[in-house]
Structure formats: structure tokens, C-alpha cells
Image 1 (cartoon, rainbow, N blue to C red):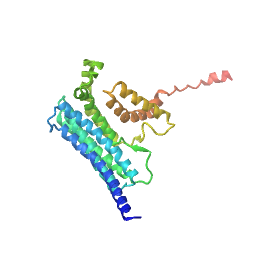
Image 2: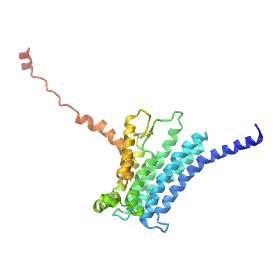
Image 3: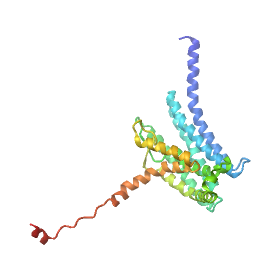
Image 4: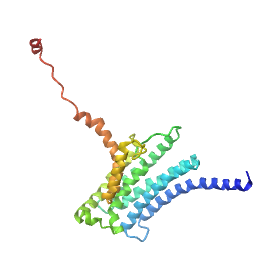
Length: 288
């Protein structure tokens, strides 16, 4: 091998090693940007700032989705990358969504201390979820399912509400004409007041032992139910784009525990048949 070709391969190897780290750090930068916009530090108005903060959280999820795949594709996976990914996730999917929720709901009747406690509980559950994931990821075999709700999915639920409420205003969308002013106002009223409750619920799901599928939409070419779910997702996005983000993110977060409760507790109770009382002894003898 010539010296020039060897130097070229070394440079390509360095580029492949830097690319996954750059994507992971992009995740952290997006999380910090979401905190910056949600804090009101910029010169934008509140709807625009909270909408941009929610969009930055979704952009952080894109970076988080591709950094691991890029590292495996370049054969550059390492313990350093795994730990760096968890630290960045703690910022983007732990601190940033909690701060966004406080800024989103503080002006609508909730006591600031109550919001702070819910946000602190969410941050603690996110850190515990990431620590447990690091321990489980150390096994040789890659698990097919997640134990507990993944932190990016929990952050997607939180970010969906500001995006839904302020999206039509910031983007000057005409979807208010489709829904009607009264229905849109009622939808916004419910979203603002229910978000702290939803955050508390997804925080508990992160530290639960509920198994979430790693590939929720497509698990294989012959997975019929997954294809049906994918078609349903595309139909929701096309038909009702304004509520698509909270609807789909809450569907992923809450469908699995609701299904578990139904089949484990409620379904046996509804399908239980009344016990048949035994025939009296005299009637048995007459029949004989």
C-alpha cells in the first residue's frame, strides 16, 4: 500500500470517527437551544419562542436517531460514545422538556411550585431511565424491546403540545378555518392545562418495567399490523396535521400500558362467565 493511500484511509477513518460524535453533540446543542428559546432570552414573542423550542426538541431526536446508526455503520461504536449520548440525552430529553413545560403552563393557573415539582420529577425519571439503559446496553445481546418508555418518546409527548397550540399562529396556518375558532380555543385550553399531568404520567412510564417495542411501526416485511399502523400514521398526518404530533406521540406512550391493563385486569373480568350452580341432590336422583 502506497503512503498516499494510507494517509487517505487514515483521514477517512478520522472523519468517520468524528461524525457520530458531531451528531451526538448536535443533539445537545438542540436541547440547549430549546432551553434558550423557552426561557424568553431571545427577542421573539412567547408563541414563537415556545414553538421553536418544541421544534428543536424534535430536531434533537433526529440527531439522536442517526448518531448511533452512523457509529455502527462506520464501525466506530465505543463506550465513550454511549456515555456521551446519555449525557446529551439528559439535556435534550430531560432538562429541556421540563423547562418547556414550566414556561408553557405557568401562565394558565398552575402554581409555579407545583410545576417545578412535576418538572423535577420528570428530570429525575429521565436520568434514572438513561442510567438503566446504559446498564442494559452493556449486555452482549441487543434487546428487542425497551424497558420503560424511551426518553426521546417522552420528550416528543411534551414538545407536541406547544407545537400544536402555537403552530397555526407562528406558521400563519389556515387550519383554524377547518376546526373553527371555538373548537380550536377549547383544544388549546385543554392542552395547556393537561400537559403537567401528561408529563407526570410519561415520567412514571420511563422508570416502569413496561416493555415498549423498539420498532413500533415496521418490524418486518410480513408484519401486517405494523403496516396498518404506518398507514394510520400517514392518514392522521395528512388529515389532521395540527393534532397529529400530540395524538401520535401519546398513542405510542400510552397505548402499550392501556393494552396491558386491559388484557391483564379488565378483559378477564368482562369475559368471566357466571358460575353454574350445581343441581340439587333430589333433582339429580329423579333424573337418574
